Length: 336
Ligand code: 2P0
Image (cartoon, rainbow, N blue to C red; front, side, top):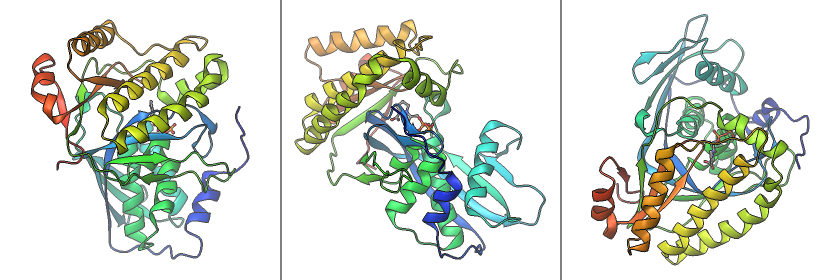
């Protein structure tokens, strides 16, 4: 299923900024929202440069996201500050940031990376998407490149696949593309605004995962028989979600997004060895949502590579939904 080539991130980075100066200005700033997929990205056709096997579609989380400031420093090593605290440069997160900076900066340039995330850590949300999108924007600003959105989206994708969807407010679709260099694999914003749309984080557990999404994706693609059905499932789901958004049809968007997330988890469960992110409380929450829906409340859920749920509903149901799930963290993607 995969079509790995020998194309490296460095090669793509050079294509993106070909002919542009690499002299830094005094500083760079970038800010990007987190995003939640309604039709999931699950599985790569090229792991080296984060190319997906299928398209995906997400909604950005308004003001929840990352903000990054870059400054050249006269030092032997980079400095990485996350939410005000200096990060040990030997840790995995710092290593990924340094590796990413190395793709774009001249040899010898050291940077102070000051990053803030407004994503509640307790929500169990991955912060890599908004983090790498903000970092891409900050680099673009630091070097004064003024890259177009498409190039910025590809640039963000090199940090983390789903980061390419974090450049826009509202809904965005990541086009899978076909090229081996991935220059046609980037996200585009959907024009639709849906002010009543709500997405809310229902925390089940924030314990560290036993397997990260990168490794889980790899195992699913390599071992799940069911995964062979995934591209066809995505094709139908993404069309249905797109049409549902255009018609402000919550029932269609909600049922399709919920089914898509469950199908993604089914491919994980079908992997050998099986991957199961759900906790008993995750299943209890799903059952509660189905019960409320049977009783007439329009509320749906999606889930990512973890045990937490994200609830989908409209403003009119907000009070009722929050009454049933008191700890919810609600986001109005168009209302900030
Ligand atoms: C998504 N996830 O569409 C899917 C659904 C998790 C479940 O994108 O390896 O951190 O950096 O490309 O983007 C999480 O994966 O993976 C993810 P990499 P990423 O939101």
